[in-house]
Amino acid sequence: MQLNRRIPDQQEKFRQRLGIDIYTEDYESLVAKLPALKRYGLMEDDHIKYAVGYAYFVNGDYTNAKRYLQSITDAQLFRKASHIFQHIETCQNELFTCY
Image (cartoon, rainbow, N blue to C red; front, side, top):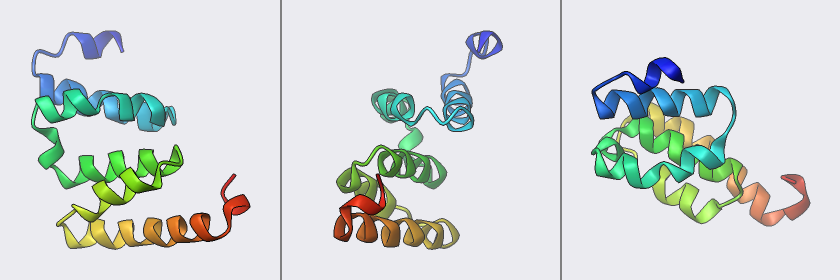
C-alpha cells in the first residue's frame, strides 16, 4: 500500500487498489471505491465492471451485481458473468443456500 501511494497516475493507482481488495477479499472496500472509479473513467473497462459486479454479488447485493455484470460487452467476460447470474438465481430462489 505504501508503494501504491507513490503512483502519480490515478487510474493505475485505483487499478492496483482494486487488485489489493480482490487479493484480500475486501469486497466492501472495493464497492466503496465506486465513486472514484467512475470519476477516473475506469468503469468503461469491462474487467473493472466484472470486479465491481462480483464484489456486489459476494456482498449479497444481487440487484447491483446484475446491473454491472449485464453492462459487460466483452464476450469472454460475459460468459464468466453468466455463471454469476446462475448463482444469483439460485441464491434468490433458495435463500439459505448462499448464507
